Length: 126
Image 1 (cartoon, rainbow, N blue to C red):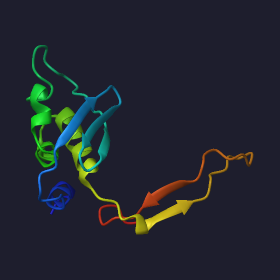
Image 2 (image 1 turned 90 degrees about the vertical axis):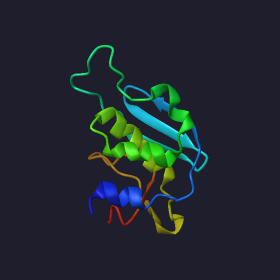
Image 3 (image 1 turned 45 degrees about the horizontal axis):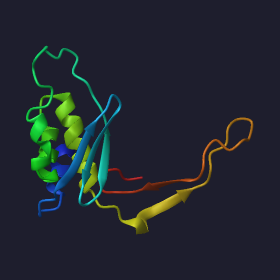
Image 4 (image 1 turned 60 degrees about the vertical axis):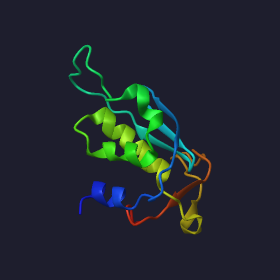
């Protein structure tokens, strides 16, 4: 089974309403009743003038998050980014599997960031 099929097969069965979709130059956001998901905005190399980059762009809020997640199978990289953001909005996080990392230090010893968190999952084992 591919990673895409594994992700899609583990989404909730009950349709989750989409509240908003935002596609910016760097990030794509899908906000649902279950949470929000981000994905890196990918742009087409050779988009044709007058052709819609995302099919049904004006009707995205009428679809469930699971329907938008199916865009992971699209040939369009913009649609795949939208599908990945929908998947990220639907994936649940087991907070018991979160681990705190200490702040990173630069070569000079200065702290470069606050502590950060990561989660292990069946999709990204650590």
